[in-house]
Image (cartoon, rainbow, N blue to C red; front, side, top):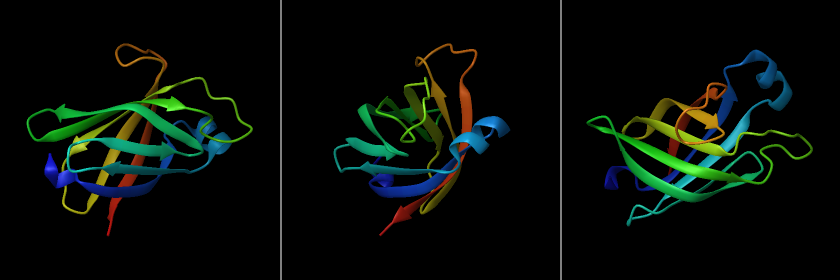
Amino acid sequence: MSSLQGKWEGLGHFLDIKLAKEFGLLPIVIIIDADGGVTGKIGDATLVETKLGTWKEDGFEIRAIIAGSIKTGKIYRKDHFIIFGHIQESEMDINYHLKSNYYFDFSMNVCGIVLKRVP
């Protein structure tokens, strides 16, 4: 997945209106190195234990644990981050999920973001 290599940034938003009002826009930064290693942030929190994988035939998926608070002074209980979509050259309009685990979470939060490659 060398086509994803580089720094990606965007402003994430909750699709749930109540959470969107409470947390506002969340800056997200994802950096993918040449070996497929991933680092990043969501809001004020750091993404740790990150894993880059494939999604469907031509897509990608990044899984991570959220370390810290996504917004200083606010409590948010979901600590798993999953972002996935089809690989694009310089801009991706995609969704991400905030969950309590990587598998089944009936109360997960769906969020949207336009990620842009930063030169």
